[in-house]
Length: 255
Image (tube, rainbow, N blue to C red):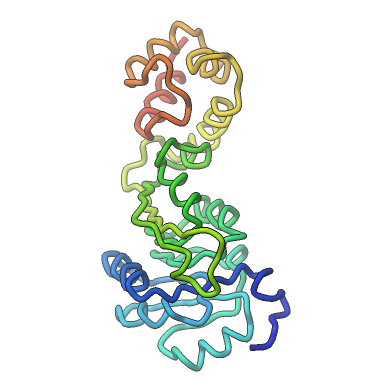
């Protein structure tokens, strides 16, 4: 196939999913959702072919213009668009994709600030999926988004399930927008800044770091942490989404 004007396979991060059970599993996860589907990084259409069988509108986008032309002919049931996932609107109710590994984090950041979608089913690097789901400890990005989104790690996909074979395994990650946010949407910017200050702050203990980040009396913060069920020697990565929400609400009300 001719080289894309955007670069070759390595520049585009193209590792195509070939494992039929994983393709079927992703399609099954999509079947449990409702509404039109946006597939990002459609490639040669292995997922696209399964998604159109669900009988719902499917828009498949890819940055490689040559694969887009081929996919339009191969899967006429789908609307196939030559587009960059870093620029195309992520506004369908369901977003599905084998995300190019080299742009996983930028795409996730776009997704978590976009409106309109309700469910995302993403195949990413294993470490990214594991961290976003909070396995082994949460990250700042996950903690900042968790009051509005529920992350779940569905499974690990060995590198041999892709062609060409990448150097790392993949991970299947689902993200669902919460019907009842843990923190009001109007407070999202302030909450995000507070979480960032706690994750990056110094102070020797979560109590002192949170007190400095919120400009509250450490004794008041200690009471909030205890009421939130946070262990005395916990680290920011140890807090569950509900604990972050209770901590935020508590320090806002504290003197």
